[in-house]
Length: 383
Image (tube, rainbow, N blue to C red):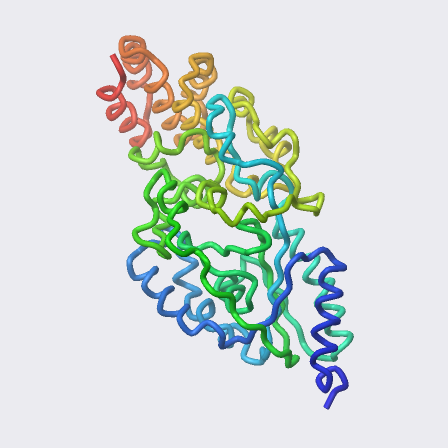
């Protein structure tokens, strides 16, 4: 028997020490068989179509639900969390209608890159110490991090389905290391939500059919990030100034009273992304968008989807000063952008002015979805 395997407590202590040395704030251990209820919950989620257009969730369902299917040799799973707590309550920004609200996790470097780099550092040390095999996973792989983290005792899945930590509240990035080493598992945490339903009640789009259930198709994070087409009209007014993701159900959780500000500099908000002006964002062409969001997760949705989101925020802002910028975007190369510009102007212009604009521009529009925006918007314009 290998020395490290003969001394499991020393191995645990070694992993915990090295994990903190590379920047992880929370460390716990579990097994690949520790989430027996997760497969059924995932199957129900998929069968009801609540994953929307995220086809990859259905395609990887078997590997996602059963870690041994992903890697048959795995014996232990090390779950790790890195705190990304914000400097201030992100809900306060929602009242500043002329500003865009970017989700806390996306206000600096892409956390996938940060976490994966640290996981590889730690995994290398574990492999060198034990001689065992290791694999690292963070978010994009078919691993159910939240159920595994709950099984390991890092927290529990709240009524909003996200992980809640008694020490860090809602603000933990998760990553995992699978290993063939035998490490004694931790006990799972218990659910501390009680009768609280703050996360359910605050959701602007009623994305929670019931406690502990999420319909992604109604979630602003899904709509602004994963959804590729026009935002369904019923959700646009409810999006407010949220232009990338939504933190409402996370930020309102009472357990955040114990949360701490992120210590990792790469996860602390950039000043220019804390409350960017919609007027500035509306002027972004593709090169400027790529420059502004270089290294940021926002970059992955592309300029057109991002400007779509910004235009919806502009329409919700009531700021007449944004009309010229929105008008310019009626001539954008992207039909997605043009359609969103139509809706934004329908919210900001008087009926007669908007009707005159429609008369002038509809005849030259060839895209059917943009034409539908004009047709649907005219009756909705305030007198």
